[in-house]
Image (cartoon, rainbow, N blue to C red):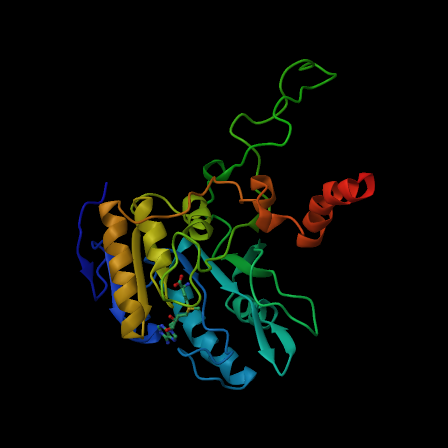
Length: 311
Ligand SMILES: C[S@@+](CC[C@H](N)C(=O)[O-])C[C@H]1O[C@@H](n2cnc3c(N)ncnc32)[C@H](O)[C@@H]1O
């Protein structure tokens, strides 16, 4: 069990939490090769957010390639890289960033194990194309002997009471009692204003998205690294499961948010949405907000109309 409570600014393998104040390329260069078990990140999407400078796509990919190359260098042979991206948008036309970055990972000899679809329900409403309601996580491994603990992320089956109906095990339950493989489409609420984890950062990961990667792809005590740390979600997810967490963040205001969250994660006081909570369906609550006003008006009018008619 890791007990240190310091948030260091420089990397050392015996530390527990590191938040480097500066650019990730500089930080990565301070880490020895084959040290990190899991790299998980969401880089800037080159869409002109306050923390990035918009450049042409070739320049963007070249800059990402430099970071990815360093991530591959620091990755352990049994380690994984998970690159979470959405779309670059140019004058209304989208460029799926996983498609343009995929060849970079291939070039470094990594093997893609899954392209996970992260589906969420809230975001901008588009008027000239369908509203974007998913992003992706490309999961790559460095070698074929990679760490993968499926049992840590199994989910309940739809029909746990199902039994074999023929053969030597007829009458016995057919499901794995630990649950089923969660598949590669994950429905997880994105962090919008009423989310328990919301901070001032505009593009926060939900902690549960990263927990679902940390648990199967690492062991206790391993290093998890996020080169574009933002509000520190990756480090938080790592610490919550007795892993070590490191990241770099250039902007002071996001580092302050990250430090606060990391501190509270170490103390066990940071509120998070639990990994196994079902997605809330407001229609189940049956409030006025979830019924169509025109249907309500009709329903409310009916007794009045009846009274009118019988007067
Ligand atoms: C998409 S956000 C990541 C948010 C993060 N996943 C979270 O949960 O908060 C990208 C972050 O990378 C930071 N950033 C941009 N360029 C960077 C660089 N070269 N090195 C380190 N951080 C950088 C930005 O300031 C921003 O906070």
